[in-house]
Length: 322
Image 1 (cartoon, helix red, strand yellow):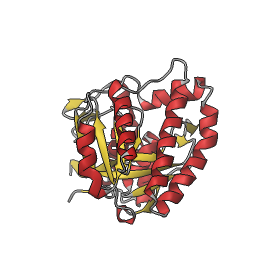
Image 2 (cartoon, helix red, strand yellow):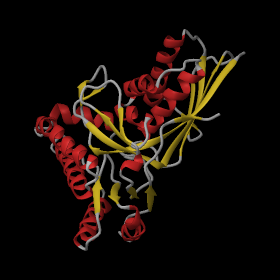
Image 3 (tube, one colour):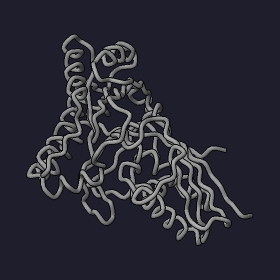
């Protein structure tokens, strides 16, 4: 056989308690614990084929061939898989996101989770989910969480993520208010390095983030949305405070980002249980109850600068297509 192929689907995840910064940069281990929700509505589908006829690795994302650093990141993972499998073949990788790429929606998380699962299976390996999660983490720490559905934890210094609860434990909805479809100017990896190196607030973030994580985890366990939402908002704002204090300051917000935060607070003041979080990008994600999702979606869509509002239920584990 000249080619072996596998197709995997993984879903983006959004951290309710944020991860930002490395405990060990060489090993790509997170500096703080994180708690995430995998999203059914944001999906990456990746096909990997190891083929004797190829003279180099070929990687396409959204139909466009990758080069330079994006290609190197994929090739690094493929090299690890080849080493594990004792394989010499190059690979053709075709990946497609059904949401904007590299704009603060965790496309690297779903992308490298899908790549890790598809590449190992295409190479003839049948690794347990924990091992695939660890492989994904080496390329993107948040990708470790996208191997699992529902609510997932990645401890500080951990090599793999662990599922905490299924989505049915607390059936919430996350709304994603998009304010652009373009890529962000500074990627997360570069932003983390700059923050850790130059921000006077970074040590405070690393010291306080575990306490906020514990509050978020306890609130989730108790199915207490107000307590979970309060911890989620604090985690996001603490993370962005550390970025803002970097040199030069990292400002991922757009005007619509602040307007969306204000709208969420207005909704909550009016009795609607809605809570925001923001990753390294301008988009705002809002957590609410299923029965309030339609009303929150309409309210967010009215904010000037918003181009779309996606609604997502908790998502599933990463899977292989038959």
